[in-house]
Image 1 (spheres, rainbow, N blue to C red):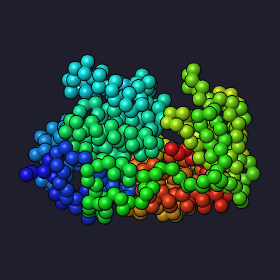
Image 2: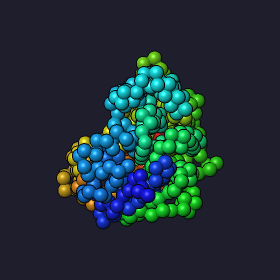
Image 3: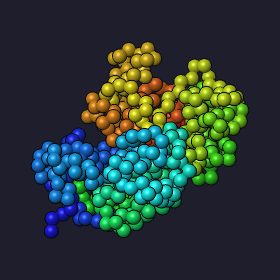
Image 4: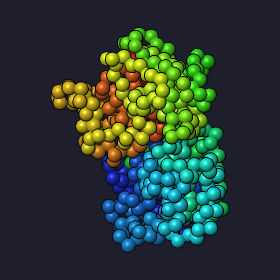
Length: 444
C-alpha cells in the first residue's frame, strides 16, 4: 500500500546533512518534536508545499510531488497550516473576516461558513473577539484565531507548527482534544510539530528530529516539564502584587547586589484602548537585583502592562519614573517586531553601535553575547527572519543583552524554546539578578 504522505531521504534547507524518511498513513494523527533549530518548522513547510524539495520523489503527498510546479498548487489547496508565528499568513486585520477568507475563496456557501465559524470561535473561546482587530488580541488569542482559520476549510491534511505554545495547560489540552476529535470524524490527517509532552501524548505516533534524522520515540521518556512555558519555580517564596484583579506581578527573585538604587516606579498609572481601561491607577516598584513575572488569564493586558513599564506606551494618567542613567532592554512577544538589520550579527550589533560603541567593539561584544545566549555561529550570517521561532527569540534576547541594560523586559521568554534552552535562559536570568540587574517578564 502506497503511503498517503511519503518522505524519502529529504535534504532540508539550512539543516546540514539532513535526510528525513517517514511514511504517514491517511487519517493518522502524528506528532513531531525536536530541539530549537532542529528543522521542525522547515519540515512543516515541505509538507505544505511552501518549500520545494531539491529533487523529484523526495516528498509525495497523496500521489503529488511538490517538486512539480503543476502539483504544488494542488498541494497548497489540500493542506492547511498554522505557523509557529501565528501572525504569519494573515490577510485581514479583523479576526472574523480573516478566519473565513480561505473558505470564501474556496466557494463554501455563506450559511455553511457562518455555522462553521460560529462553532470554531465558540470552542476556541473567541466568540466575542470576531469583530476585534488582531492588534487588540493577546498572543494566545491570536494563536487560537490562526487555528480557527486553518480549521475553517476542512482540508484533508492539517499541519500545525507549535499551535499551543502560548496556551495555558488546561486550555491547551481542551483545544488539542477538540482538534483531534474533529479530525478523526472527518478522516483528516494531522501533523503537529510541538515540544510539549502532554500534546504528544494525544497523537497516534510521535517522532523526534535529531541531527537531521527522524526517529520514532516513546513520549513517556520525555522530561516531564518539557512543554512547560513557565519559568523559574520558587514555591511559597514568591511575592504577589495585585494589578486590577486580573493581572498579578510575582517577584520570584529578591534583590541582592543593586547596580542602581533607582528602580522603576509606577505612581497611579492608568492606560487603555479607546473606551476600555486596562490598567487602572496602578502603583508599583521594580527593584534592581530582582526578577518579576507578570501573570494572568489570556487577554487580560499582560503585554500592555509590560510595555507601559518599559516606556513603549505612555500612561493616560499618572507617572512612571526610571533613573536618568538607567538602560532598558526590551524583547517583544513576536521577536521579529524588534529586528532592524539583515543578518543576526548585524542586528545584535545595532544597539551597541547606536550607543556610540565602535564597530569593532560592537562586533566582539555581540559575538560574545550570541555565544553566551546559545545562538549557533552558523546562524550569525543569516537573516533573523529565516530562523525558527525559538532561534529568533534567542537572537532577540541577545540583542537586548548587548545593550548591557539595567532593566531587561521580556515578553514570553520561554515560548518556542526546548527544555534545555529554557533552563539555560533561566540560569541567565538568575545570573543577571546576581549582577544587580532587574528582570521583568510576561509568562503564561
